[in-house]
Image (cartoon, rainbow, N blue to C red):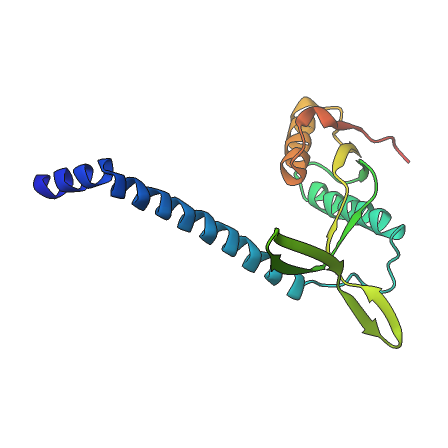
Length: 180
């Protein structure tokens, strides 16, 4: 075994060994580039369009409402909490990423690429294919609930909200709800 390792080391130290290392490095980079091209094509072919009744302006509002409803349902299930009001603050608006078709051409000057949006036709209308919708980040959450004046309840609710949304505990306020 030692003889094989010694022979490989000597071979790699020679000029032909350097060529082998460079060739392997180039082959690795080509595989990485090729795998990136394949994964990019998969994303555009499996893209889903948002519901037609949801406008771009309404998407963040619907997203915020859904977050508030789900958090309310989660917190309401916690021990000692009956009434819950949740308010979520978002960082901005949603962003739509459109699917692109990339055409490459090779010439003496190198490779040139040209990207264009993928256009779909539906009922005589043409529109760009949406590959992904990125919703805005949650900036903060306020929770008013029964028992919100107790430190143990505040800690449990704050920890649950920060864990579910992936935001720091400092961005979650928990307080006692007023009586109706």
